[in-house]
Image: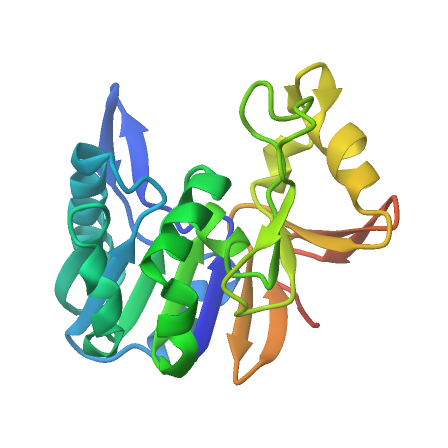
Length: 244
């Protein structure tokens, strides 16, 4: 299995109040690296983070159908696995690439558990490309950092949940702006993530950065920081890579 665990792959760009598909993010050699493993006319299965938001899912499917060819990656078809098509998880081997979307981490996590995705992935040998929440849910143990109002102070909110087990890395995406965000009167990084890192470690990825994995060997490419035992340290820089 080949993994591309990204913060953001570059799907839509706002112009004049409207959203338009754009090429995949080419920073840190991601597209060139992806081309090494991409098959001609690849069939893609998009697994959503919002299984009941059909209109939005259809819009994303349409965008994905355009951005891969725009980036020089030919595709055959793009199918959706959401609340209308949960059975697609039993046919993973039909697809050359799986795409895990972004959204609310616990919602996607619950959907993946419902459809038995972890078990279905046990013998999958294609490409898994994930963004944001999708990347976070690939971990053995997922750090579901609070993101919605009330989650930061809710004692019942589970910040650590079982994931897909494709990596041991707990990922925090969108670090370039998340370290400026406040939630429930707390700084998301300094007051929440840093405190939760005691005895643990998180890899904070900026958009354009990603973790690449081949046969279980992992590298981080681009801007990334390590949050571990209450401290934040620089892990990698733009156009650089670090073996994990």
